[in-house]
Length: 549
Image (cartoon, rainbow, N blue to C red; front, side, top):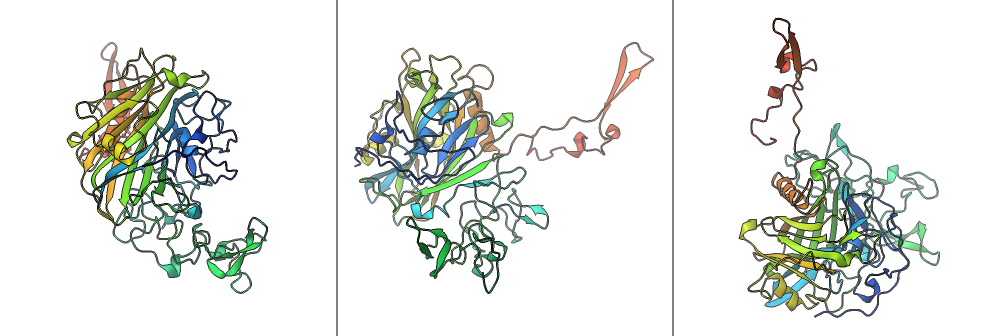
């Protein structure tokens, strides 16, 4: 059982990462909206990032999306509102809000007792997946992409941006380290393939050895007089003369999470750590957290022993319009088997123009059963675009699962693990697991709960992988680029392994006017008339195995 905190502490420090300006907001009270300080809220040190191109959504390594990703702060202003930023906007520049908060939830039975861990609970705003405060220098948000590599100043520094024999790495099917295997080391800050060598690889999370570093005093490396110019080596007997504590004293270099060079731990950024992963989209963003955090506690929450990875993808091209796929990896790092597992999402989509007070009260929730897609749309404000979630893949065939979709008000389904699990497994709704859609003619400030399963027992060390996509569209199911079409496109992308569709080039065309016949022309195409050397000849790029077309 959980209880709600009466208030939340106000912090003035924020450690953040992302690809947009991020400024904390001092006034936590949202005009015309519920006050975040009256709920059970997360970590001020959590990192945030804005993902997407045509559609953008705030993510955090609290495993929470939307405005709530910034908890206990509010998102930075973006010119659309004077009280807060936007949690999810589509299309960009429209000032149409979509998402107050959403997050994954996993439930199961451990030693005969029902347990649940939540990324977000729309009732209590519980956050039960958090990054550890002492891991702020190691537990980063990881970036990569399948296009041209670029150094990301707000991301993971130089790590993941290596060239080997002039071959660009982190490509699908690329054997980065020459060990005969491909894509065996995931982008998660860990040495998954076990080839890390402390003698040669223990150079620190920044990926830069002492010999190439420059000290805060401007002095360069010298093996005798200045062996650690950046003061980033783990050495409990030595002091850090570059970074002082709060009262101006030197601190000892005894924290292995802060002083990562020569700490004996494989750190992200070092050679042979995350060196053989595969970029998927134009912007891959990976995050990680656990429900076993020690830095703070959610009152009365019992950890299930879960480490959770979130991988998100986004594309610039139109085929990715209004689609952000997300893969979740639930890893059992505990000591107990979790039986009868269900996975779900608490979602509080608030759809409408932020320029109008109370826009969120004009929403209705609905479910597309054939696509396993829940969504919320604004029934009043013209130009509003819907927001939704579609299930893409699980270890079991999608048509073999049980689905529970329920729209509800602010107080459901409560905060007790046993009650939440009864929603997740459908026990609470034996005759109506899929609730009929709300009427657009009677809109409310609505939200929905969406779960599916069951999955086989998750033993210690096992991983349960789930894929969903966050969606929008210019309409629900009519007109171009609507939500239904985007849900279908997201499923196609997933089935193709997130390989983008290929547009085959047009062949060279040769036109000859036929003087012997009035208005006659002769059309010829192919490599014979391709002056570029056959690059546009369909026969030279024909897809015999039909993997592309």
